[in-house]
Amino acid sequence: PQGRIWTHLMDDLLRIVDDTLVPHPAFEEATRRMAQCFEYAKVGREPVGIAILGESRTGKSRSIEEFQAKHCPMRTEEG
Image 1 (cartoon, rainbow, N blue to C red):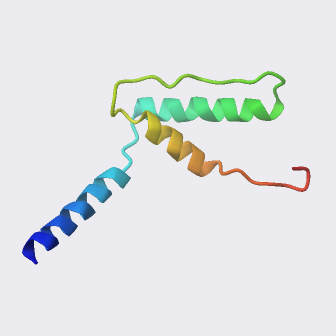
Image 2: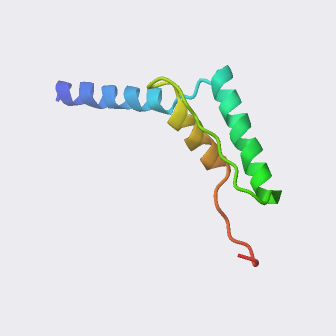
């Protein structure tokens, strides 16, 4: 039973660490640029994209996930 408790505590701790977001300048810049592309896509005629580059485990996927969570798709009467 003690081993199980330890395992659950470690799982909880790892989940907390994974869920913790520590914004930093590169994260903020990536988020700002994604927002810029997103806004331009509403009015622009040509598709716009950006490359998000960086070392492994530096938050590239997390910045995309956070941006996506704030901009969920939605349907309107027009489509």
